[in-house]
Amino acid sequence: MGNQFSKWAIFIVLCMIWGSSFKLMHDSQLGLNAIQIAALRIFSAGVVFIPFAFFHIRKIPRRKMALVIFTAVLGNLLPAFLFAEAITKLDSSLAGILNALTPLCVVVIGIFFFKDHIKKQKILGVITGFVGLVLLTLLPMALQNEKLNLVNFGYTFLIVAATFFYGFNINLVGHYLKNVNPVHVATVSIASMTIPTGFILWQQHFFALDFTNATIQYSVGASVILGVAGSAIATALFYILVKKAGILFSALVTYGVPFIAMIWGIFDGENITWVQWFCLFIILAGVYLANLPDKKKATSIDIA
Image 1 (cartoon, rainbow, N blue to C red):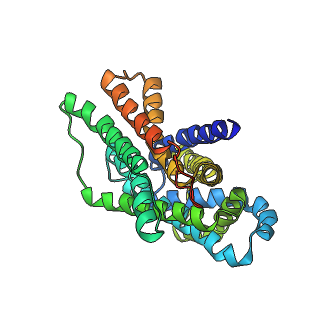
Image 2 (image 1 turned 30 degrees about the vertical axis):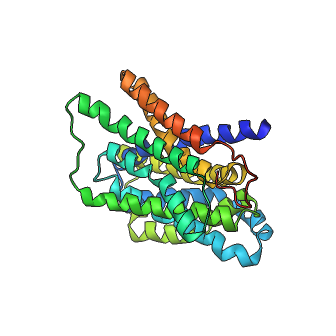
Image 3 (image 1 turned 90 degrees about the vertical axis):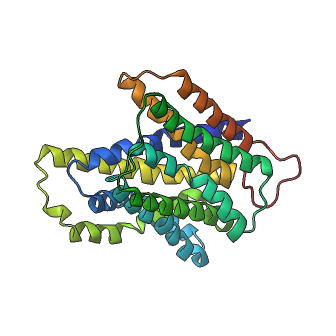
């Protein structure tokens, strides 16, 4: 019972953090370019984790160190740059749909690259949740005769690539780092990105910006919060969730993002329609299906 409560608590917290990330990325664009946003995000996360990494690095097996660092590149560094660039050109609704491809990528990559055996009901749950999310985005627009902005459609491939990296990274962590403390993996991996992202910030003339400018201050603040909460804290929590609940359930966090978007909408005075509630019910049904326990004994790698 305690494990069930803790995994759902982490799931909800991650939904809240990552559900706010798109807003923070948009706010960061006011005074920074895409490369500066991504580099500052990971640099901030790395700086926060450096003190912890000094203690945790000794507890990671040497043979696993390269893989630990690689997880930061695959799961944090590359997606941060891809999302920061894509979000400047794409409609946020489309970006939200594409971001939800992560669980599908986890399933496909798990089957083809890691030879996972995933129950049909879990695959059905992933597909159901994705359909619900697509409907949540498109149905209200159709009812109001609005059109999805497909200008700069080519930038969608940046987010698709990011979800592929996410999917591969989740499988790597779940299969090859399952016996390493998830907090140690998060702190050491992200702290290792401080030097390369610091160099990128210098190369992008970030340190020459006018930090007395209110817009610059606001954008820098948004990027730092994005890094500390959305990359540092969220990565540690996510790896804990992978260890507690399995690979697939952890990936379903992306399906919770619309809930947070709706909460932001309520605070902004938006009305939530029955159509949106119905679509959210479909998403929840998908998460429920994907999280149903297997009747047979679980295999060594819990993909649930």
